[in-house]
Image (tube, rainbow, N blue to C red; front, top):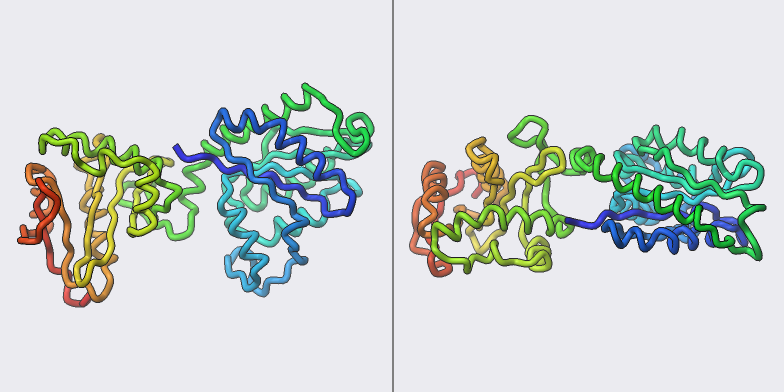
Length: 356
């Protein structure tokens, strides 16, 4: 399945701050565990973002950003599945740079876990972390119970952290908890994604698939096209043989829509224009939910998405795929003379006049 992306935020921007050294320790300590459990760590130094104090005219909840620095920060946060903030404690609280970075955005934070590595003197950064947890909760971030607290006087020598096996283990344990929570929250994140619309089943939603969905699309194809291979007495079916890399490639050139429920990809269809034809393909529904109307819903959604210049919808299916052919005939498709790959037939349907 696709890798989880965890952004490691170094929050202090003060020249000569200890934050970069703590961030380097954390990355080094948890990188082996991250590789084991399928996590991509992305270091992000807030000081490198050059975020001014909130300078957008629109409220962050609108998602309307006029400035490039905000859009760049939005893209970083939106792409992450979770966060670890490496933060100092200033006067019993988190640094203003972290508060500002949080306040700049809105929905990009929602339903993602966040862990903290705090550092300081008297309280080892714990008051900063407690302060931050109050703020992140308002943004629908989910703070972890696990926290790493570093007392500077006990842990730092010549600007670097002394080796500490117990601290390394605590960092790895925090990553484990973050990953478990990120997986549990994935359905909430998917449902909140921009462009998601209600799907045909209660609680389901549909949205455009992206290259990041390639692993799940590959699994869906392989479980759906086995029956086609048996019915047509061939394994030379692209959907059955494609690698995740090949799926990722076509996801960049086709418009693909997927239905999800509780984080599971239930079905998909892809479309693109070819001249005045609107080509449909890879209509797939997981075997255990066939007969529930998902295929018809996807087919209708694909037709409604046709570009205005397209006059008919066109699709190919196996010549012996009787169930597929029956579905398409029942929804108005008829055989055409358009040639397709060997062993397939082409069916087409005129699109409504208002689309012409």
